[in-house]
Image (tube, rainbow, N blue to C red; front, side, top):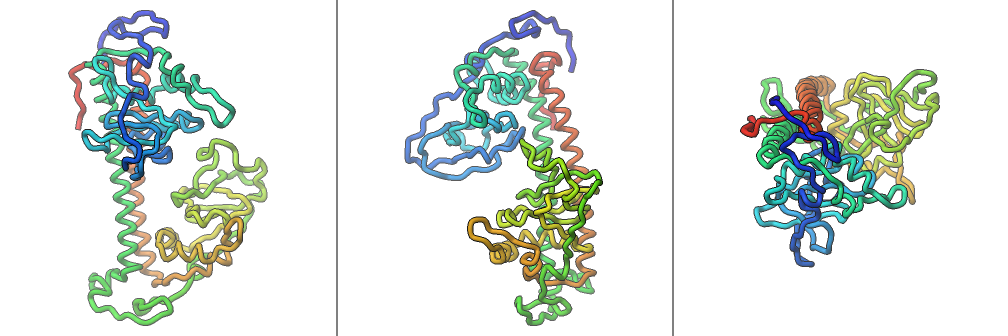
Length: 426
């Protein structure tokens, strides 16, 4: 990948001799003109549809165009407002039809390649490079918490631009790594879907393997009446109280990681997840959370914020939280919480006027069909295998991401050169 490079001194530092220094506004399109008539229904991308340092747009909706940013395939969306910009919300548009124009949040800066100057993908990688991100952040103005990039000031900032062929070679290397990261992410989503499908087939459709290994219900397995409808013989209608137990053990003087329940159904390190500190320095009254325990904030469970701790660490949550263990039923409970039937009961048992809340007493009364313990343990083993494979894939994602993030600034400054004939590898 290395080749002999001669450098020259410029106003922005040392760059390869063949490269040029240009203002951002000359090197690329900044909010380029895109035509959309008001009232026309278009695909719309909100700020929440961008994930930090993720190339893909995660989602979109259709709505009548009323204003905002406009973009087409090949454009880059870059957040211009705090803290989204600092957090790295940037994406490459590649989900539209050939001539389609979409629109999005007014808080996006739209960037594009400029003929004979820059390629679209190179512009994307420039937009997530440390130097251009620093330029954008330095261009922000406004009151604390509502700062935005000044477009004209950003456009005047100068950056190093390699020849077009080298831009293509740089983008090929980085996009190849991003494609491998995306493929691994898709594989992990598939593994999650497999686990959910097995749960539904066994515990909702009652097609778990019978003694002959055949689907129970469709093979004539005996079904009996219950207050929750017909269920397999040997099962019973019950509640979460049958498979969980509340915990109120205090951390006291032990070292623990402070956790928060998030909508994704996980308990995450509060320090890493939130931009500001959301917990006390004194943890002695915080509640203990161990591997496979669940915890939730009673006043936020109605939006799905209930999580299981999957790491083998000592965690701590605020004293206002509810914590419970599952005595080996953890994966069964985790999947059950995703069912619409269970979600509707969570809303049913919530109480309060201004802010809905669900105590442990309410949670334990949520109705479920209780299967035999042996079947739950068998399901746990399958989930363990899937999660083991998922963990290996995740480690691969972490490694590829580190390689990409290490290469990115060096490639953008010419400290690592790429032969122009390099193409993306499979």
